[in-house]
Image 1 (cartoon, rainbow over the protein chains, first blue to last red):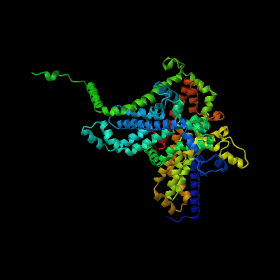
Image 2: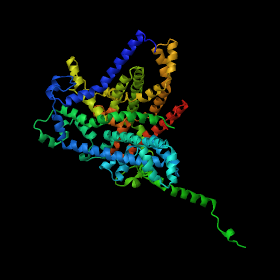
Image 3: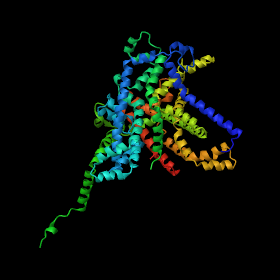
Image 4: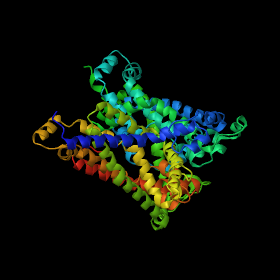
Length: 292
Length: 317
């Protein structure tokens, strides 16, 4: 490498400085919310810019975990995320593999799948079908109408196509059915890809808000994102957490620390999986852009 | 003479072909079974709703159902184009999309150029991990964070008071609605938006830079003459594809940001359809607005895809 001139050195330092600043802007809300969620109101009011709890206070978390609506929503979101992802994988993988085989009408099926990427009937007609199929106000309304993401289907099919065909041909000659090949050969070979796709789907389920407000009326079925909106954005704060929590604690924590604690709890699953997410999502973006 | 061989009926060509097809289907029956659940999903939740678009040409009456409601032809579409409310919503949608294109899109490019200039690979990876993170948060969390920081007794307003300034009602100010929406998109997606650019930059032949150094080009000239041209096609394609999705501004973010104070400047097509069709039960009109959005979107995507291909690039499909 050549000598760096003074101008270049200054440029490099400014660049590093700017990137550190950008990173701080990205990180700051997390640090602030974390600190406030574990603090008392006194400390929050006394220290304008709280970046670490002065005294650790767990009241907000205790209060939230005593709240029936919040716990129910955690349960609902976990259910939808786990069951929804299993359904997603089963539907997407089996269809993606079936569409790599030499079947009649394959071209038309693929074209119809692609068409849904560029045109959709829209909110109202889809709502009517969800209603007519009896899913309104059922958790399955968050799962079945989202069973396949067409884009994921196409990328997964692309992945299956990259598996050498000799393997399945040999099994076919040995008398295996396509179903057996899929289960015994293709799926085990695709474990890393399936892990990546399950992450795509799981994050989408956990973060999804729109379908829940569209299809679910019963508060007992609200997802974590819906309840979080009640607490933080609709500013219902403590009242959104129900009466049970109030009975547990005589002096409920202030709304601000409760709001921050609620955000933390809803975000922790994402943060826990973040190392995997980052790796697989970046690959997924690339996969999607590198088509045949 | 034995005439049996002659009298045997020979199957016609079409019959033979049909039996061939049937045999092929039967032999592949497990492959069809694998496709079936997914196919049913697409039929029920993607294509039957398209049939439901007839709602847009009816005066839907929930008691008489889709099959029993009266047809009104293009009446709802006529209403749509004469309706000042719809025009305003359409303008809002386009304005927000354009602002995002103007501010959020270039920032991702600049950020990737900055990351690309880093020599320390460990530092680069750390910064990448940090700036990608907000992409994985839900819109409820992102909008929630903005609410908490910007509310009347929030961090920012407390700071303004300390400086002796007036507090600003950020979340209920019509003038600040669009800037805040764009700011949220910048915070959430700028980092993530660098991935495709960084991938393109990773493919640049290092000997180009070496040759430039020999020719006495400084870093700015290298960025201008080597780095930027190497991601130009990525920029063009992403820009064109983004133009194709200009009507998709993001329901969740806008819906969460909307309140009575900012509805006039913030309502977009998707939230309007939801408001009209679900909240106010004006099903047919809402379907018509949705269909209008879908058709314009379809034309835009197909056109932008053509454009992308004309630039010698792969399109969306």
